[in-house]
Image (cartoon, rainbow over all chains, first blue to last red; front, side, top):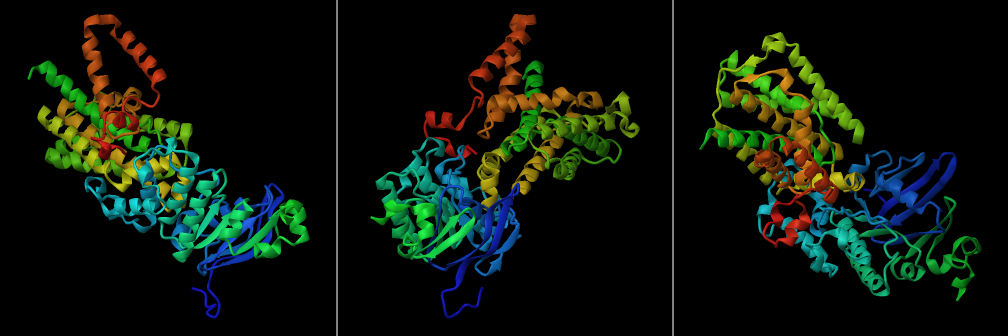
Length: 260
Length: 280
């Protein structure tokens, strides 16, 4: 753990991160921190490199240079599979639920990190009528009001429901840092409100959130701080109300209509 | 029980074991087209142990299954670096190589074949097939079975959730090789004679057909596939020389109409909620 005792400790710390694809700089010397228990939004125009940051933090892409630390542990070169144990889990922009599995089974896979022993892998839990693992997963679904979908095949569910189940699955590994890639995209107003409730409940539990999101009202209601990316570079950082006034940010992303 | 019926049921038992040997890697998204090679390892190793070392059949069968599994693990780790059609080709070649090794191994008879003195009666074969089905049903109630589907469905996400994709795939491949070796070892002791030519391409390909026909989504698919492929040609015997043509036509039409196989999870939903626990 880091020894930043006076302040909140830092849950996610990114320092001097860079990444190029075929000579194009996707991320250029990016540094920012997410304090524990806070929510930070990563915003910027399409192609700014927001999802690339997620992919590097979760280990899907190797970094060119720079460091990534989760809960004070350097994970820069850690295999992607081990990073969830270091404390960082994520959801996906294009919802990556396993289509051949039921909702409940998807959540059970999400619990793997806390049940990774050989003995746990070979326990015939399906023979136990209400096994602890199943109860736990149903409980997490119920907290989001989604328990009615437990037995459904995920492939057949509405987009908004799948999106929220993807979020529930990300919370089940016991990671304290959650990266959410456009959680509100494609949701109707009712679903967006439900999602806002879900995220506020997660924050109340002490979880740290890094959110990529285009809906500024949503960002405003969930995140304390924003980091603005443009062409892979950080052009502003701070509370949304302050960042909004920034000329560079308005030119690059938020535009004039946000003045109202 | 008539001799004919016993003969069909013994064939069925071996086909069921072979189907599950192929099903395990398929459930994790890998096609093993060299299953006959692992059957050959089990068959020759067990025959050698009972013939030359005077081991009891049960011990020889179990040790040979373990040996086939170990070879599967050693070969699987490098071979599983390939994917899709390349993995299929690599395992296909592997099956041929193993069979060719036994063809040239004089200590187990070489091309002349290898008689096996100890005999496993039909009841032992039935019990072994039932044991494999029971083992697979039990395995289907574990996280391991869940992860097989997860790894097949989305390896990237499974990895990010902390599941060792390579570990699960290697375990499935190894277990499949072990089940194949188990079946081969029993085969040697039931038919009392083995020859390398028996462990050929067709022996590798047919079990794949059983599994794809029965469906890979549930643990019952391979059982249904093996049942169908063993019994249907027998029922069609009445139409004599046309039966294979009719059978082939039916398979083509069936797979075109239902590529996901016969037994699927939605089928279980359709027929009530009695058996969701056996789906993987």
